[in-house]
Amino acid sequence: MANLKALREKIKNITDYSPDLQQYNDQLDELINDAYYDIWTTKRWNFATKMYMFKFIPDMLPTRDVITPGASIGAVVNKGSRLVDFTAPMDRLTKDNFEGQPIEIQNYEYTISKVVSDSQILLDQVFHGTSTVTDYTWRIKRRFYDLPHDSIELLSLAHRDIPNSNAGTGRFPPYGKLTGLMPRREEELNLRMDYAASYAEAYVWSPSKFVPEAYKTKASPVPSENADGFPNGSHLEVCWAFLEDGKVGALSEPQTVYFTPGQGTHSTLDITFRSWDDQDIQADPFQSKDIRPSQFEGLDKIVFWNSNYDRANGERLGLPVWRTFSNPGGSNTRNTSNYLESVIAADTAASISILNFNQIDPGNPIYIEQDGQYNRIRPYPRVDSWDEEITRQNPDENYSKVPQDFLREGVARYYYKPSHLGFASDSPEMPYEFHQLIVYKVLETLYDKTGSMANAENYRRRIEREIKELEKRYTDHQDSMVQRGQFRLVGNRHFYYDYASLKTGG
Image (cartoon, rainbow, N blue to C red; front, side, top):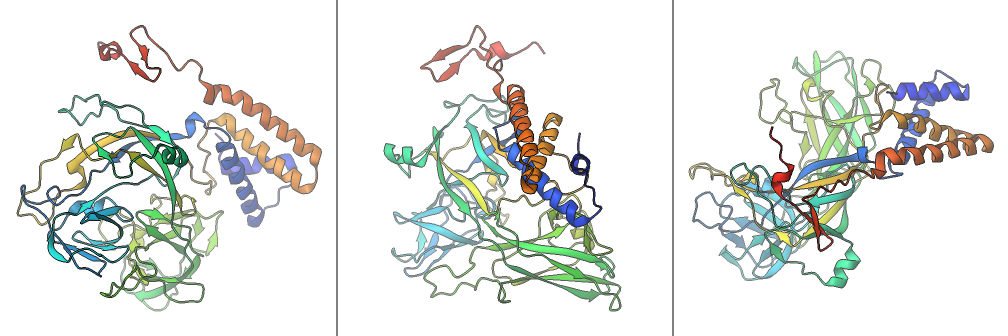
């Protein structure tokens, strides 16, 4: 296995140019990552895929998301206002990212601009129906689903037998793999937008979700006697990004902070979110006369720190590797319920404080550069059913049904984007045969840049030749489709078979 340092040294050896300069190493690392992603996206390699359980989320209804069976939750709506108050809390409202999803009230659809709490939301426009304190016509729908943050392309989505249905024995659904439809084809078929059923038969590629980019960062140390804070005399590099519906936008301009000795034994850290003209980035609190969402409404902020950084000398060790801060409460003990959660500031907050050194951890999630653009699909029909319903909470507990109360899952496989190579020990997430291709690709770029066209063409031909060989092993798989005697094709679409034929005696 070749790691980033080995790849870099091999390129230096071939080019016979080995300056011991961090700036040159960073430039080579950028070229290595460019080559890495270029080869990664050349084909749909079978090692470049992930599988996960796709959670279908049924509608929220007045009689479905209740604390006490048989009760109903009303909506308080006023004509001319964007605010909707529910008469009881609903746990799923804050757990399932319903922002950006439609809500139907009195036979008209609005879009949820912001989920304020488990019993309050803001609409994207003012309510223009009949004012009432007990509206029971509302329905919140999960029409659109964002794909994982590292997805490049969805390769498969299917209803499969799920072990957690039918008392753990599994159940075979009436539909298997869902057909992917491009928007133009869906429009030609004139499929109904609001049609719901127990299972989806297809999914439609929907417009991508875009989260805007962040701006500037202001990081300020605050002297403290807290022994769990940041040690004085050390450095830290931080930045932030917008967070909308659980999706992260492009990063802000980073800033380095130095914890100055002399005042207090340790320091805490205040991170302020600034615009390019040095104004605070924060949404205005909701006002009763707001007829449209205010600036930055629904855009929370998430903060990052550079883990590829020499905190003693205040210098980068290579390309930045941005990780989230954890432990939002700033607890100095490990055993707290939200210790592993990321630190997130509300859309109305202009800054956030990092209190303890344990909020930076080398195992925290790494930011993957997607620049705020995320794939999105619309299952057709919209799934409004479930396989399992978990026992309701006790009526005296002050929360309603949790997301796992309604459980229907599919199996999804997607083509993903790996994290970039930042640490010297980072290795490409691909078989070792591909590592040499990364070197070839960088050399092609370097020789193109220096005008050595013959050498560049030589490495270009090597890449093409090697790619063709590797295709046979990692994409073609001619022998993967094995059809046993008990399989038969029906309608040239599905395989029907005897389930027992796949079982063994073990």
